Length: 472
Ligand code: ADP
Image (cartoon, rainbow, N blue to C red; front, side, top):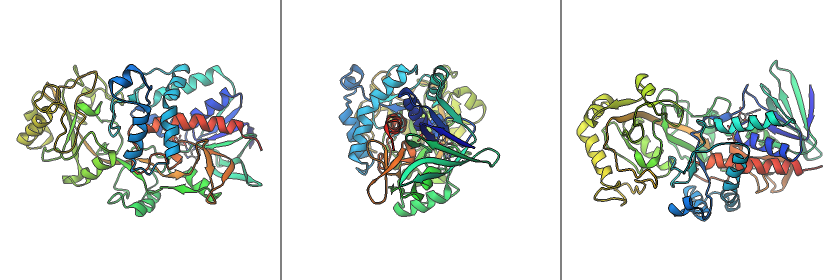
């Protein structure tokens, strides 16, 4: 089978679909190659936090936030390893990305929140659960517009290069048949990261030794399709790979599967983490790498998230993954008790320690004698602007067990601010554009929570524009 479109997109996750819709808006017809039977990728599994600052708005001013502060935190949060120009592009186009999504019909909840590892109250949350709102929006666009063809169950195998220009992709179809897809304009690589490729993550972790191990005993939040295919394909035609050893883990994995489902937290301010001794061990408002490394030091590499009924007033409310807290409790995946002592008994931690941990935390929350002051772990995020968290003191109380899990790979294909892929010789590889987790060098050593969805929208749109504009 041989197919041709103006723009060919590989990968139907967040970045790929943003690119496809943008190319369509530019009047191009598009073929999207997707290895699985669905659009969504890891983006669909995301907690749904999208960082974007509407500079000068009431919301931003009330939180002392600005595009410049988002830039600064993104750079510093990644140990200043991110490419300054790519980070500038990310933060400066983030709000425009939200506006674009809203214009397409996507709905967001009012206000902003602090996502774990986001470091600040600037994450917008879609009304639809997880990342599903993005794909509902992109599908609705496709229903109203011809010109985007989805090729599901089709795995991209290698990029086609003619006279030094990327002109298409060789794929394997569902029955093992060969599918050749050619582009009149550009090819967009949007195949995501390599969190489910144990071999790759061990190999590249050797370079940085950020983690004690990333072998098969460490689970991942990713879908099984996220195996670094695009990175391997791009490398094979001479693309430069950057910062491949920068791999992000979260301390929030389900103990059985490593997935984020069953995570009961809503926002950073209103919850603490305790170990099996019932003691806090880290700044829960800090960086994802620091939190997860600290968790590796705890007994059985296990922790509990603790919070109160402020987050779940009736028990019928859902977490960020559309699961009601009561259903999680019924399934034995979360714990609920009227007192902290009973909660401690359920999760088998010393009650005295749990109570002490909570009391100490409460002193820093609204109304406490140390309100707003940094605690012994350096935590400063205690009270969110709208909800005004007054601590963990209203039963019923909730707990959920969590373990380290591989979440995001910050390294990948090198791009410039037009999403052109850069070769090992430093020159642009004509015809090839990349966006999303397949790329490297934006998030540095540690990605801020909430910046990945922003990445998919901002760079996905740029890739759609650039690939549309490319001619041989
Ligand atoms: P991003 O957040 O960067 O958009 P996602 O993980 O959301 O990344 O999406 C990546 C998508 O690419 C997934 O839907 C995945 O199934 C798809 N994909 C990965 N490898 C291939 C491949 N070889 N061929 C086609 N699609 C692929």
